[in-house]
Image (cartoon, rainbow over all chains, first blue to last red; front, top):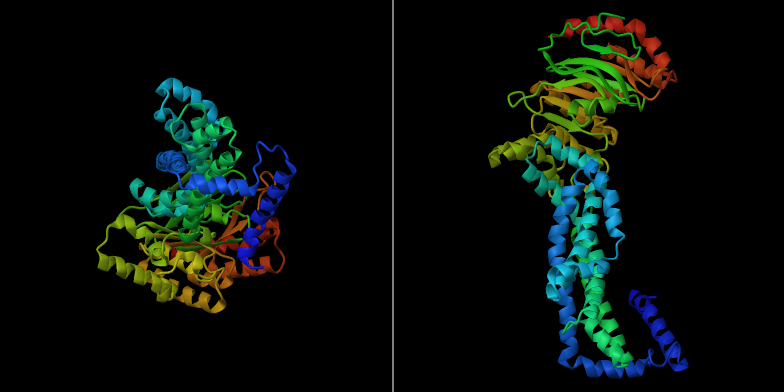
Length: 246
Length: 282
């Protein structure tokens, strides 16, 4: 079986199961449109500007959060992970912070920054920053100590050590962290769009679709959110495969 | 027993530090240096230009001693002093874990030249030093633009060895540098390294299990595993001229590997070794 056929197998099975479930009215005819109804609604919506504005709004929020999280989380991760003793000291605290659902902190940002885009971006970026920092710090703390020893014996300055060693040691964790942070940023962004009225965004559109009993639009929004995550994650994985072989 | 000028080893070895080598002459000096559960108290003085092998069973503390000298480990008690300055030159180190010490994001050339980054050399001098280091290990120039993880297991230690000598070190610490090489490459590297050591006058501390490597050194410290009071910690049981070290290693290889046997076997020889070293000491 060719690779293409193998990769299409699961989607084909899912669509088959979906068709059977929709025809059987399970779990509910209100929540489960038939594939043909979905495709009709999707064709109609995708030629309208509104759904693209929603997609771009959510994509912009996710990318904005990552634009803050990758450099900031990367630097924090290097600062904490470059010495194993420092990492061992902070790791229990980070494990506690990691266990907190990021969206739970959204009301705090609303209190601090008000009802608006700033709160949404700050909450999404903080969740993503923590995840990038965690992966970068862990990557550095677990890197072979012989590499750091080699650079130390070469007598390089702190600046050169950062550029020759730490940046490169951080890259695998940075990309893995960015992929995990991307998923978290998408969740926080969509939920925050649902919680506090956003004019545009997949979360806001999903809420509208639910209130209007438009299940086919709801499924389109879900598919578009999946497409954002799939495309960005795939791009990061491609970068990792192409340039990082350590 | 007594009469060893350069090395004393604690932990019941019975060797004394008489200090015939003046403290000011010692380039490397360990005084009752101990690393918990790895190395018993060891006192060593090594003069500039001396070439010494560290031999003995696995886990007897040889690599730990090199790491102490390199400053990569700290003694849990005692003192380690390495007198290096700009005029003398730096310290070169080829670790046993050679693969892990290479930076995979740099080319082979950049890995070899890493210790030169701190020196701010003119490009021509930089290239000359890298070429000289590559000559020592006879590394194929076609490999220079490749990344180290694409080299074979026999080529990687050559890169590490070239990196260790590129900055013209005053003290060279080699931890089983030829163990991954084939017999032909071992011979080539050994000859070139011997010539480089003779020309540079560098001090050598060489951990090895290979009898042929002893051609590079003048004397050997023989290590054994543990004592009755600290079973995990290795110790130095003898400081002998290289000819006696060969016999010692051969005996260990033949099966007399018990640490106490090794100590007994060398106790009579160490006195003669010390005399030979006194004669050779500067």
